[in-house]
Image 1 (cartoon, one colour):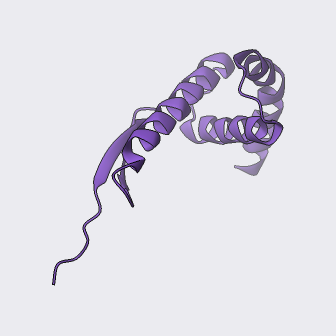
Image 2 (cartoon, rainbow, N blue to C red; image 1 turned 120 degrees about the vertical axis):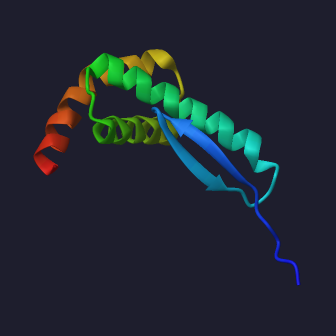
Length: 98
């Protein structure tokens, strides 16, 4: 009886490594691209907000990506504008919650 083995890949986001189990080999390329996008966005947000707390950076990144997905946009100018105006407000709210 052989069990169906899933492939495990390792991704790196914001200097942290995460092992992921894939359902299909076809997922690997897509997951690696998505991890690269998330890593890039986290680094942009960290540098523009001067926030070193990785949890805060991750939350801000998630909020920005969710906002872009909801609005159907992906433009960098929009992201830069949102980071410069909205992130400071969100950081204050995150600080209150944590």
